[in-house]
Every structure is written in C-alpha cells, then in structure tokens.
Length: 470
Image (cartoon, rainbow, N blue to C red; front, side, top):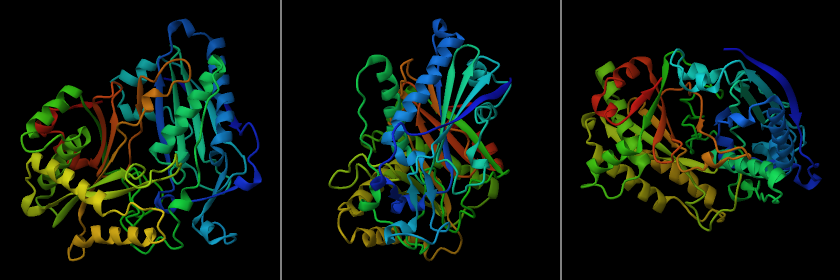
C-alpha cells in the first residue's frame, strides 16, 4: 500500500480576527489537559459515480474554502498557544495560566493519495488495524516538538483509488475536548454544505470558558486530579506531559453489538434499574481487567479504582452556553479492594450509578459563584481521601466515553461517515468508548500491559458479549 502527501497548505481564517478577540485565556480544565494532539478519523464511502479526479479535486476545494470560513468562527484554532512556562510577559493574572494568541497563522491541511481501495485499510486482516490507521497519520503531530509557532490543528485528507476518503482531524487537547471537536466538525460540515445548498450556516461557539472556570495560577498543588479526557493524568503518576509510547502496553479494539448490550442489561436488570450502555460495558471491562491483573501478578494493590471522565456542561446550573474548551472532570465510579476483587457485574454497575448520583449532588453546580474554585478543590481532595492511608499506589483504570456525541452526523455534502474512530492510546489502563455507526453498539479501545492483555483475551464471560477487531 502506497501513501504519499501530494499537497500541504496552511488554511487561514477568511476574515481577520478583531483585535479585541486576540487573546483567549485557558480555563481551569484547559490547564489540566495534556500537551497532546487527539486525532480522530472520519471515513467516507463516496459513490462510484463521483469517482473521478475532477470531482475529488472539487471536494478538496470545498473542504479548504469552508474550513477558511469556519475558522472565522473558530478563530483560536488558527492561533498559537502561549503556555505559562513559555513567556513571562502577561497582561493580566488570568493569562498567567496560558492563553491562545489568535493571530490567524492558520491550520495545516494535507492532501494524501493512497494506492489502494479504502476497504484494505478497514478490513484487510493481513495488517493489524492499528498499523493500518497509522498509515493515515503521515504527519503525526504528537511526534513533533511543540513550539510557539506550532499549529493547533492539523487536517489530513486521504483519497483512495475507489473514491473513498478519510479526514483525520488532530486538535491540540489544551484547546478542546470531544464536545468542542464535535461542534467544530458539524459547523465546518454545515458551512461546506451551504456552498451547494445556499442555506446560510449558523455557528455560535464561545471561547470565554476562563470567565466561568477561572484558571489557577498554580495547578501543581495536588488538589485537582489533572485528569485529561483520554484518561491520563498530569499528576505525579503521569511521568511526562507528552504521550510517549510504552512498549509494554498493548491495545485492542472490542465491539459490543446492540443485541449483546441488551443481553448484558437483562443480566443485571433484576437488581439494577435502567443501567446505561456505558455503565454496563465499562463495568464488564473493568471486572475483566482486574481479573487479568490478578492472574498475572498473583495479587492486587490494596485498592483499585475506575475513574469516569464526565462532561460538566449538562451537570452545572445555570446551563452553560456553547463553550469551547475542556469542560470536564473525573469522578471515582467504582473502587474495589483486593479482598473483594470478585465483584458481581450487577454490583459494579449499581455502584457506578450510585457514585454518579453522589457526584452530581456533591459537586458544586453554581459555577458563577466566587467560591466555585475553592469548592472544586475541596471536592477533588474529598474524592481522594480514601487513598491517604493506602500503603501502595492504587491500581487505576480510566474510562472516557464518547458515546452519544453526534460524530456520525458530520456530512460535508457527500454523505455521512461510515466509520469514526481514533488511533491506539500508548498508556495502560485506558478505556475509550465510542458509538458504532448504527448508534446502538459500542466500540472499545482498551490499553493494558501486554501480559495482562494476553490473559484478558481468554476471558470467556467477556467475549461472550463482544468480539476483537483485528
């Protein structure tokens, strides 16, 4: 399979950003996000009738022109990030945590050609799926040095012999979470469709999250979890700010069809009322992961934790506007002691539901209060009190769910994507959940230590409900 970049452009906003919008400070949760890019792949199956060079060129032109217009609304994406350790000159305390200089320098847009049909990337079992996805990251932003002039967004359009196309969007995590990325993609696609349909698109992103969630001048006081959306930490256990590949980590993709999730729900329905798809799948994987770890090590730490990343936009009062940024945190969805490692699935799901209710009641909802920052710190400390007297580090798994986000509605005018996915995550004990293209099943990207993954794959209970995608 041959892949090559045939064109590289810098796309700038169609109109200049006004001076009064030039500086966008990072909010509290932006500060806690890692310095990494999060790539998302959108696969499009273009009709055979559209499979000629002229039409492919037209689609590329529409993407670039609509992107330029979209960047007038999403102007920070075309700017450059200034972190607190990169500059000592700030005009206000709010900027000391870092800010985006909205200087209209633009985003990177790559055009690539693939000498094969798209089906080879999606279905050919001669290559592991992760190896095939890496072929679509010819310009991996995470492998580059991050500097003051580094773009905050990179887009790669790969066109296949069959006419199929893949759009890979990599956005800097300190700027966005999955909600923000989804909003951008839908607005960009709406603008692209407007070129054909003539309907004026509407986009109303807001970049004032720092006025709601004020940044902290010192984020290393240990009070907040520093948990990023992908399930990694910028605390002491992180080791580094960048995503470094760990050779001992193994990733697998699991798919839970809707019928199997329904069977899981039936198993626990007598004791747990109306569990969600995410709770069922996360609990089953967590249970199997703990079992695998015990089989490999012969023992477990005093306590194991399942942290669930949660979107705060619909958990606070009054309701938030369409804020762009990292408006999320994590809570302890389940804790398991080594003496009670063989918990029943219904018990795990029940605990997850109960802890979510406790979180929603305890977490301060009035984010406009002047005391909100202190209340947030108090909550973070309280949630970790159980670890104070633990003699050894806890065994931590982090689950981030992207389910129910409308990523499959991103239609640029030539149809909705047939598959939306992300590449492997090079950190252990991360559970990423995404919808399958029917919106009913769940695709799981799981990372464990290699030996634990080998045992995990032998779990008969688990694999009676899902299958591994090679």
